[in-house]
Image 1 (cartoon, rainbow, N blue to C red):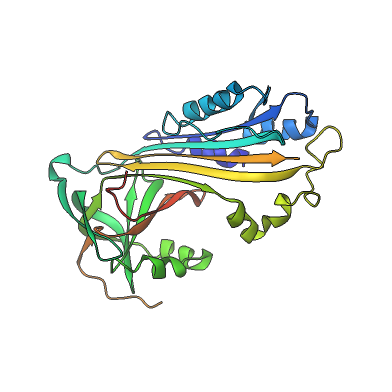
Image 2 (cartoon, rainbow, N blue to C red):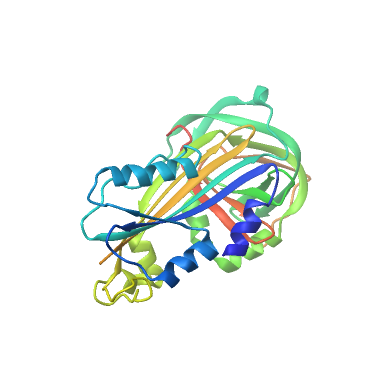
Length: 305
């Protein structure tokens, strides 16, 4: 993880990536030296002790989050319940310039087709050029590089406005690897909406489904390596908050995760492709060298900001 953080933050001079970690402990609760040492050494985590009974403590944590995400996310903690002894907070900030910027004079309002058959208006950016492109049964995809090209946004567009759910149902580690390896350079036109989306979710259920269930169970979770003295700790909740903004110059994105501890077949390709993203799609911001997904999201309606 230390190596990944280091390589991502130095990936591209045209892309700003900041990954920040912090631990916020309740004053009076002592944590094991080795636990704190590990977080400092490998995650670069700041360690701070606060009086959680003081309402200003939540403001202090939120101020750190705001600074770490360049103001894109201004809060993650609303209040601090009495049983919480530790917050582990991870923040990532991404600001990338397109390798080939969109000309603002070519951006025009066009119809956006919703998955339920409705229509909205979206500011659609347009650019002609050569891109890495993929065509498969039911969808097409294009790679939009940032800076020197190591980092890129992949946009996956189903053939119909209602096809996103089916496309995502087929997404797994194997299909992802196959898709990424199958992009080929093609000339064409890319039309993509300007958009800004915000997302916040409590991730307890998702993490339990992935196999972390015991970590949330009081009396069964084993975090014995964290406290200096014996204590029955468990994960109370995991909150994730993200913001992604895309425009003609590039992409600005930020995400914060808070953990609270409590006691098919190939289709023939056309010579020139037309990639008109005027209905729901999903996108991935990806680092080619480390093969790391930095952000993954779905755009249902660009007019909802």
